[in-house]
Length: 157
Image (tube, rainbow, N blue to C red; front, top):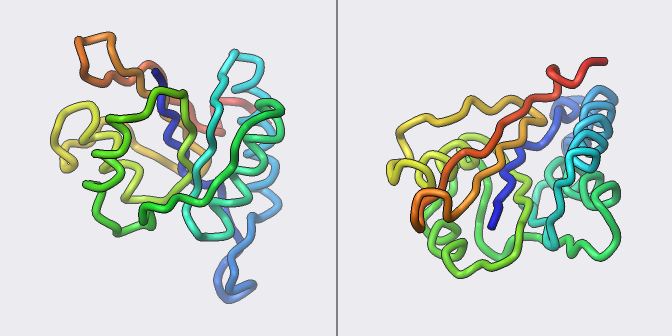
């Protein structure tokens, strides 16, 4: 099973739009990233996002490109920037389907670290807006490993 942790792409500044929708550069980044993920064979039946508009828009772009039938849903578990990761960490243990989670820092970084090392304070990847970490369960027993990690700037302009 795979979990894809996605840091939402760049959003407009709060003083420009308090709802913080995606910026033009953020929209371009997520289009390139979604296209790259589709060409790479990424499939996920669920796309979960936080309650923030920038995470929802990131999730919608990914679901659109990665195929019909993806369920896009707002997380029922709090996954905002500074929410504790314990509840989602426990919930993931019961998941059987590949899932994309679109959220924020430092939450995404702490979740990746906890899944891989057991310690949320050990950094395993350095997220930037639009980054995607693919974590795989099962390669090291029942534990999680980082299968790959990519940032938008690696995909060119």
